[in-house]
Image (cartoon, rainbow, N blue to C red; front, top):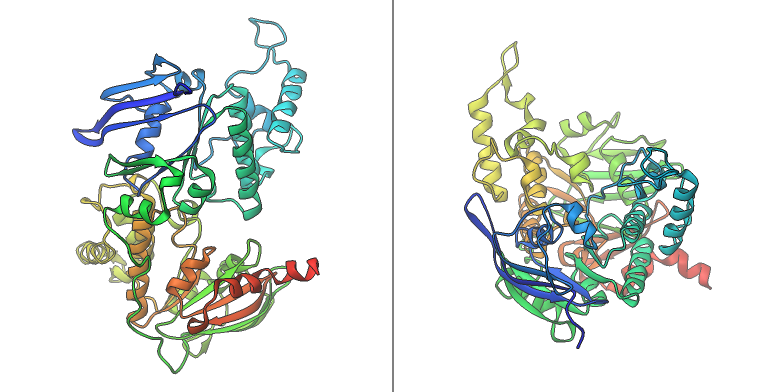
Length: 508
């Protein structure tokens, strides 16, 4: 039997006297892919940060290759052969690929002198990039690479440090389907080389596809650990949330209203982006937008909210044509937009929950010719909204958004728009990167908004999510609407066929 490469033995951790990990024990063998799953706040990141030298453990023991392992810093972990590829990649975008690969130490022309051997660095960089099948010159600035290519640079960087264990934290969140498949193939090759992998993901289907064993955490406790053959997605969900979820999507209790649409789009066209897009959105309707990456879904959403221009067509809100689309004009007409990148575009990460929620509604809470903010009224309204979306934080004024889980961050984004009481919500990938329990809470909020008469434009890459939530689904491809599917006739295969129609034609 192969000796474990890494062992956690009753590891515990507390922050400010609050226990966050309780007797965590599991082991990892060479060439094994271990899936680590759990809701946001379950202890996954803390566990991996202990392995990666970010946090010390309070008690317990870690054993690496048969010896005690107590890293004092990420540099110690790296020197021990553990690489941590975070969801937010740790690359310098203004530097070249080679400079990022050797940021911790360049080869020297003369030992002891600060003279970089650039020829040796370029040659070694080319070898490392070839090992991950990334065909770009080492002199390429990282800013020019796609997200998937940047991730491959991180993996190449792990190879340069002779990593024995590579930890992937939500690696597919920002990848296209093609980049995801490329990553999965690479993980298979890592496994074949005897490199151990810890794979953290909310996409449980990917965990079942990739991993040999699965460890499930809940509230800082290890609640499940078994070979993949003894695990199912339903069982993982049950272990993660502490209850059985017979239905992943809350039931819809109110149908869309008949009558005048809250939003009509007529012939919307921007060359190279969208072409002759037309549809309507009824009060109380959840209208899904499906399509492959590059189909124009997010681009259309940005145009509708006035973030990007369009050449021709018409956008009609509550029966009135929007004269000049701009975010301010759209907000004034009762529209709200949740961007797919909440961290970069949807939130002020260094600001408090209260400040984030209040920001879009400051003018509505200002009075007098000096436009002074009515702070008491604003504070009361912010508190009511936070309670309505059930944000898990005690102090709205002091808690920074960056310290919240992904699910609670998304609730803050929804809350800031709810304060404006909009009638149209454009939601672009609203559940990306959040766990199954938080998704369910977001779904309930969406259903409640629809029940109150708001129209919801719901963009998602997950077909099951669209089928579970929507009244209708429109499928986009190459900037055009290629199909429409009614709730009574939802079929996963039909929706996929509409999305992949161009590919099918090319195959024929």
